Structures are given as structure tokens and as C-alpha cells.
Length: 505
Image (cartoon, rainbow, N blue to C red):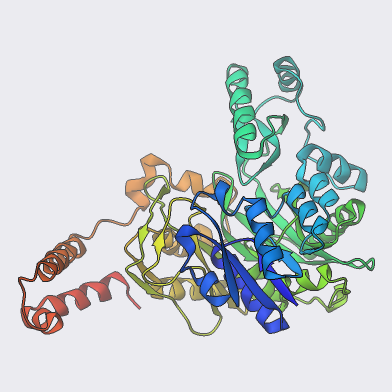
């Protein structure tokens, strides 16, 4: 039996590993810039699907299905992103006689609509933030809602996700422009310009429940995750379990999530997301009908393999565990490592990874999609890897995270690692005193001089000398062994000394 992975990067590598342990053959697909990517090299076979732009490769349904038929696979796993929540692609996979590793196309459509999913959640008994259950039909309807509920408001694309198509509104004067912008983003990102409105919860926490359901009537909640460290509504750091959810609220949260799962007829792994206020009241936000980026923290705490379980469910097998068997142990934290400069507005940082050192030791896991020497393109999501740590309790997990971040080194491009080193030292993070706007407030332009790591002139000096030496070598003006020359000149010791200072133990 063979499975095709319709994705790239670290999630494609993760799926290859799960398949290998299950005895399944793996088929990778790749764009022209990914022909030597780790997921391509690890899979049993690989097929090209087009040029670098995602629209012509990883979003090219025809090319992916042709590769699936040509390679004779039995299953197609979409990972997350790209086509993972595309009901049309799921239908086409099934129409080709292949098994779709995910929920039914009907469930994808139902829960992918923010308005329809809110109606379902309401009918299932899950609490909702005040808002419309149907798309806005006019600016006047929006103004009427604002007069009734006040500000701030949040406009959201009906088919949105990942923070796209969302606009905060603080006054009547902003309504028209915000509505136009939200509609435009919805059309551009999701092909759907419909927008709805809800009352904005100020400084809430974002907490989600991992769920799994099979075709035999079994459904379980595999714990909750704390996802409040975000930038522009995009998750950056996640934890399991949430440090603020009491046992009583956790039971209520699981009941609400499973009510949504059963009402939707969901069959796969997925996530039901909620907003929490300071009084631990929770409100249904949305459901993600796919594997989540942050699934490893749940795996570490509950001792499960969610990718394996997703494949088993797709094959018609019953869940591996009952609710009573899912007992949490310890605490896990995940950091998403992006090729972005967090202190320059998260500006993209494409380029070649000239040096890579990953952390290790007890309780440290790195799910990565890159190796040293890889060129990071601009064409795709900039996530390079995920650093996950586990420890017996949260305080120990925070300390272990700090240790692992001190070992993690990626050179040649800017990454979000310096931001995580900063976060791991902040008293607010240690105390879990944060909310969904915390990171955006921390990185406001006026605060950057206070929080950004200072430039190190010594590092710049060594980099300049090293670059000059390399240029001389390439020009053929330096004879003999370059390493010996570096040692004799003193550059070698200076470089080691600076690196030790830059990346302390």
C-alpha cells in the first residue's frame, strides 16, 4: 500500500516517517525549486508537479492527481495548508478511486464556512461571541450591528483562516474601509468575498481542543492547546496543556468540542478552536478540518501519533484509544521557526542556509523540513521547522526551551529564533501571563529598541573578514591550505570566541 503526500517541508517529512513506521510506501511530489528537498530525498519515490509558484505546483490539482495515478498510490495525504481544506480536491481524490486522508468533502465545506459552522456550533450548544450568523448584505447592516453592540468589532471572511480577511474596527468612521478591505482579502485568498461581523473580544486567550473521530461512532478529545502567542492572528508558540484551564472548565470545553464534532458528522483528526476571556468563559471560534501545525505538543503530552491515527481512520479502522485512556503527562511547548526577521516586521528572509545546528538532549524534538545548504525560496510559507520541548511540568519545560534555543543555530538567513530566546526569558512568559495581542504589543515599533537584541559589531567584523578571505580564495590569490591560513592568521580563534559568545551554553 502506498500514500502520496500532497505537500512539502516539515509536514511532508513528518508524514513520511509515520508511513515508514506503518509499513506504507511513500510518494513525494515537488516543484522545480524543491527537487532536492528533504521530503523528496526521504520518500520512496518522487514526481515533479510544476514550477515554483504554488498555483502551478502544490495547488495544481491536475498535476498532483496525475502523479498519484502514475505512481499507483492508494491514499493521498494533504498535510496542512495548500489543498488540505479544499473540498473539491478531496472529491477529486475520491473520484479517482483513492482514499482521502481527512474528513469528508461535506464536512470540509460545512466547517470551512465560518457562518455555517457558527450555526452548527450554536445548535450543538457551544457558546458563541455575539455576532451575525449570516454574511453581511450591506454596509448599512454593519452599521446597525455596530449601533446595537458597540465597538470594537471584528470583520471576518466567511471562508477565512490564518488571520487573512480579518479587520478590527474601532469606530463608525472605519466601517466602510474595513469592510472593503476584508471583502478584498477574502476574494484574493479564498475566492469568496463574503464577510460577517462579531463583537471583538479584547485580549482573549486562544485555546483549541484536539479531536479525533472514526467511522464507528467513536469520538475523543485529545487534550487542549494554548495558542495565544500570535502575531497578526497567526500562531507562533503553542503549549499543551493550557496553563490556565481548570479541570472543571476542561471538562466543559471537551464536551462542547465533541458536541460540534458529532453534529458535523466529522471523521478524522481535527481541531475545535475557542476564545477564552479572563473569567474562563469560552466561545466557539472555528473548526480546522485537518492536522494542525502544533500537533506535536499533543503527541508529546499524550503519547500518541496523530498522523498515524489520521491514516488509520481514513482506512476505516476504529480509534486506538478511548477517552479514559487519554491521560496527559507533563507539559510541552512548541516554537515555529520561520525564515523571517521578527524585529523588522517579520520581513521574509529567503536565501541559503549556510550553517545549521539543531538542539538535542532529553525532551527535545525538532520537526524540520530543511538541511544545511538548502535555499529557502520566497514562493511558500516561510516555516523552516518546529522546536518542541517536553518536561514534567511547565516551569521545567520553559527552562528546557531556553536551553534548546541556546543550542539552535541557523546561519545565512534571518529567523525567528532570537524572538523565542527573548520570550523564554520574559517574566510574562514564565508566568503564562499573555493573550492573543501580547506579541504584537511587545513588538510595537516604539518598543523595538527595548526588546530587540543589540547588533554585535564583533560578529559583523568577523563576517566581513571571512567574506574577504573567501573572495580571495575564490580569486585564487591565496595559496596553500585555507584552514591552516585561517589558524595562522588568528581568524580561526577569533571566530570560535565570537561564536561561543553569540551562542552561550
